[in-house]
Image (cartoon, rainbow, N blue to C red; front, side, top):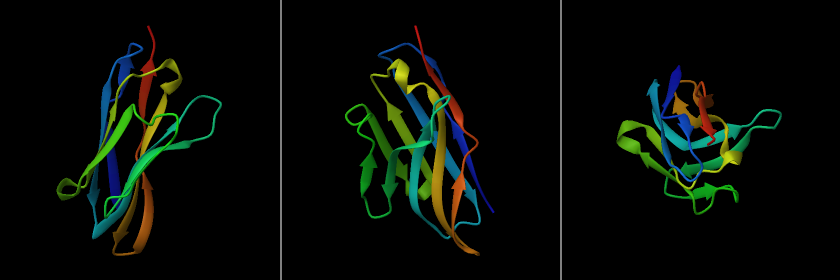
Length: 119
């Protein structure tokens, strides 16, 4: 079993910054993809950014140029630096990881962390 533990959410004013962290632990052989999704009230969960082993990175158009994803493979940790935050970035942010373990390749989710952008 693998656990993803997120931290770093909170309340921030428009134009401000936050940094989210997500650490994976448990029976991990390797991690293919780590990324971040978000879900705002009444909306579907959407991919914000992910980083694939080997270096490929993807961003949603809505966050390009404002958010930066990074990984520390030695620590099985992914970060999301969020700058120039807007009220429409308000959502619950979820960490996601595709992990190779004893049972093969499985997909895992964190518990979610609330990000609120408001003055």
